[in-house]
Image 1 (spheres, helix red, strand yellow):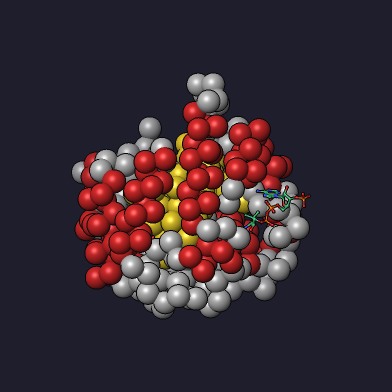
Image 2: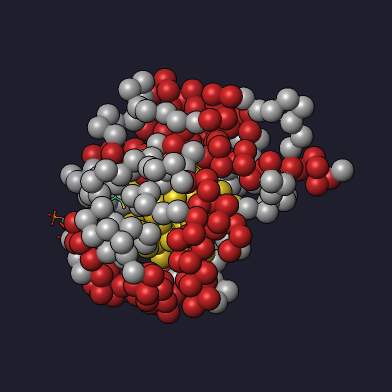
Length: 314
Ligand code: COA
Ligand code: ZN
């Protein structure tokens, strides 16, 4: 069993592909999932249970999930916007359902066409249905809060609103809360304020951070979240990502750079950095026109680099 101080979750297959106009062939998605799991990434959000008419990239959601579930040791998660999506996840036996709603009213209306209260009520029903399932067939249900650090329709988002909806999702029975900077507005000072406020309110429930690097503050925000005690981070290989219903949204923090920074700080992720970098070629070959970011890929590992795992063992 690998020792991990921080859990990283790959979201590029969902956050990255949802805005990309070219369909990535199912076999290539599976090759990406298998290679990244083999590199040591413990959890991958493999798809999104949204109407295929709305996002054709996820027309193969069922097949991708089924095949990902056969990858040994991998936690397979998927995004859901509503109960119908949850039903698809239950039927497949996916490990984790990442429910999404937005703290900003306008973004919630644009993205999932609902008032925030309706989203919370839907989440409550999803948790109830999950709990009614037999032991072993019950997925982990995650409550995700988009636009928690800013919204490209409304601008600043009040901290009190983030706390209120985090608490409502926690009280509804979430197993984990994700606080997301969907449009990359956050700075480290704001991250400290928001995460401290949320964590003080929801007690022991795990909180994950989902940052976009739209304005270059992504990894600085990870540093601030680490100081608050956050130990779960979303990221995407090569920094793919963006929300189709949020103007100006660009990529997530780069998984490769995140793993390097954490490892360099002595925090074990379980990820083999060189092996992870090699996974990029699968994306490059499958989607030649997609923009790929990454400082570690450009610069390489420092000379005589010693991995956190080896330093911990010494
Ligand atoms: N999966 C598949 N089909 C779904 C579905 C789901 N999760 N949710 C709804 N549908 C179907 C309904 O069955 C209905 O089908 P029909 O026209 O054949 O009867 C149709 O879609 C419309 O259903 P409705 O409940 O009226 O949905 P809507 O049109 O109000 O859309 C969402 C609401 C939530 C489904 C849609 O806004 C959505 O998927 N948003 C997510 C956007 C996203 O992925 N954003 C990026 C991630 S943050
Ligand atoms: Zn995102």
